Length: 425
Ligand code: UD1
Image (cartoon, rainbow, N blue to C red):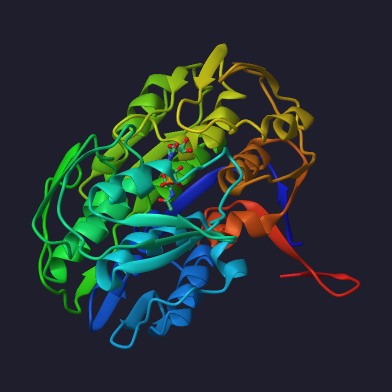
């Protein structure tokens, strides 16, 4: 497996452009299946998860071309087939094909989906919501067969504002008979982006981005051209890098209104921030202050920034508490940070972090995507050399991470595991 080699201690200075959002691109790609026609989607990041979703769409008969961040999809000849199970198992977002296939064809086969191992990640909320719209689920040896004679709008209340369940309901309801009102919906900006795309295809969705979404079903959807929103988790990761390493970093294309909780936390810690309509700048330097932060559904502090925040707080002045309320198993990176000299204790769903004045480079292993990002941040701020194993997990969610950090002055290289000997690229 590839690894990253980081020599820490460099200040980061300059500008980077934030890529399109992974977590908006994946549902938008799934939603393209709802249309019978051609879609052109701009600002799609070239990430491993995106390539897997593309391969899944191709297995369903979609014609695709992806170059320079522009994704062209022709869904005219799509069919409700069962894609390769190994592919389905590679990304959690493969479960989003459920809403779009049921919406367009009235049937879908649901197999176990994959993704980061950060908790159980069941689909009960997705199933319960779609059942209210007339979808039935039959267990099969590999998963479930979902089918319906008629997909009808319904009044649905999610027991928890699940991002994926909200997205599946939006997609299925877009082509259902009548009106669906979804209460306690997830309000993440990526949901609003998905609704924007479905509306561009001719859908009638209002309220996306709030906790109540109204979807009036239409008879059919057509092709559309759309631009994906910038990635707020990539934005957050670079903001923390700037705050931890000192120097001055400008993130072009970043949207301050999507990062409210993180910006508030960074200000509280003492980082210097400046925001405009489409940029965020961070100035680091002095020692940051400790914080007490709990993750929560949007607009709360994002669980996808929790490991990176913990890495930053390892270097803060004082004792911090970071509590994880969204996923049950998202502290597996802590033992790796401890190898770098971090002082962290886990008590239930909270990490108690005693700030230290310096971390030291070490050999560490990423256990999932954001955990990997946290180790990279720690390595950039540490003294000496850090090796982060399993760089492939980081590739799932960060476009050109090494090149972007390198352009800011970081000493970071990727070492590709070659046949028999390692190649430096
Ligand atoms: C999405 C994001 C992921 C992010 C998460 C929370 C994508 C591709 N992934 O994941 O990066 O960390 O939102 O912001 O957009 N749950 C149930 N039953 C269900 C569904 C969810 O119990 O049927 C639980 C999950 O186990 C988890 C919590 O709800 O504990 C949040 O999950 P959810 O919001 O659905 O996250 P994802 O859509 O999987």
